[in-house]
Image (cartoon, rainbow, N blue to C red; front, side, top):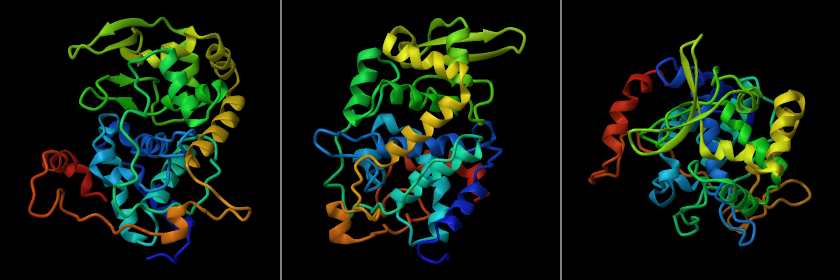
Length: 318
């Protein structure tokens, strides 16, 4: 076990697990970024609720939100890190893992600060429905992000996280990847969004997305309706065009926006110490590591057994 407060040791442990040949495109980096994103993206600036404190996805009320489908894989991958460093909170682990993964995949270094605590129960979880819905349009995108306190430039910068990973019909309902190399951070998402022809396609499940097929590579790419919305709104489009042409500007703005995202709902004093009421009352409360067996003791869990089977091939590597 590492010494309490040794976050560099945790960074090293995270880096060691990123390469997973049996998982999507050989890396768990993208799904760790999504976990960090969704753990903070429930924030509401007006009510100061939600955000990255608490690690609420440990509870069904948040973890079972359809918008978080598939993130159980990310949480499973991080369990060995939690076991090796039991002093760290899940909320710090999840957010740090996303930042480490971005940099490891060629992205910018994200300014990350520790100090988040884990909720002791589910009484302070935010309501469902606060996370972005990829099937919606411009108004939805702006409303969701404005609720968190982001402006148009930050919204577009954060959308650049779609440089990473892919969609699955059994999770989001969409299918495919945005870019050719979904485990390498770049500004390719913006370049492809602006320079390729995207045609609407309705999947067998009735979900609408946009596709482009590269005949030379015999490879298909996709965009969500929310991605296309960035081109239809002048306030968003100007930043899309900038980032498509200026990789350095995108990296700088993304690093700032993602660092802000990781701090949503966190209050710090002049010394950087977290002063949220839960932290002041309970201190740095690290929830115990989850049991190695899925599901609740002596209770059925309809998700646990399928997840166990699906994860079996790469769980042995952890």
